[in-house]
Amino acid sequence: MIHKEISIQKKGSLKDTKLTTYFLDKSEEYEIGKKRPCILICPGGAYRFTSDREAELVALNLNCRGWHAAVLRYSCAPARFPTALTEVAESVKLLKEHAEEWAIDPEKILVMGFSAGGHLAASYGVFWNQDFVAEEAGCSSEMLKPFGLILCYPVITSDRTYTHEESIQNLIGDAGEDLREKMSLEKQVGKQVPQTFLWHTFEDDAVPFQNSLAFTAALGKAGVPVEYHLFTPGEHGLSLASRTTRRADGSGEVKECQAWIELLWAWLNRIC
Image (cartoon, rainbow, N blue to C red; front, side):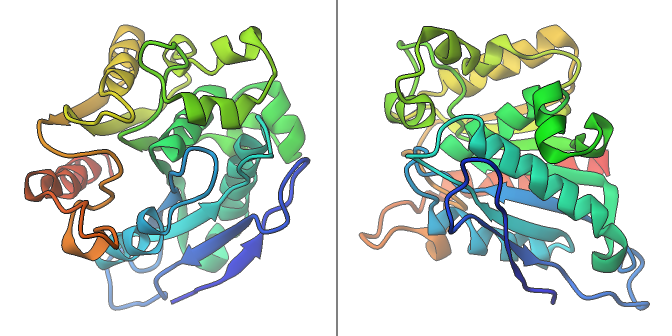
């Protein structure tokens, strides 16, 4: 395995911002061993921290199914928008630039996010082709194009009825209503957004399912292929919803929701 920690430093980045790689070794014995798809993971944490429960164990789960993975420990508060977004762009650029060395299929790089990390991943999905992102990355927008998004109980809207207020406040600070409106990602969806997989739970009382539902509806209106799964049981922040990722207090294991990863693999097998 190619396991590296790579510092990611953009304007406004915190010093501990890093990309950790979980790349499977090359092997002539595997059909796809010469070049594999890669998923860039953005853990959640309300833009206040990045959760361990949505990082390495998720990456290793992806490895077990033959995919490369990388975890971005992006800058959180006091860093503000668009710092974390430009760090995602820099990470995608890095993965594509080193595709040959790391046996990555550069045309099949997806961005996965959990909770506030889902907002970050969705932000990348809607903003990747804007000039300010390419200018900060120092490359063309085409170099930054993602193949797909995987959004797990994401924060999407900044509308005060359904938003996760802490995440939005940590992201924009006192920037004002114009930027807050821009962070309602369901209003930014267009043809630029790649194919997307989402899942959420009805019982999520931290980030209401109306967030992912609004993004799904916007994707459908824009004609972007989308797959959306809503489970009834389950609190916020389930990660894999399994014993391996449950919290120190024993919560976070919901058998009904463990199906999301199998549904994801069915989707990935269709698009890849």
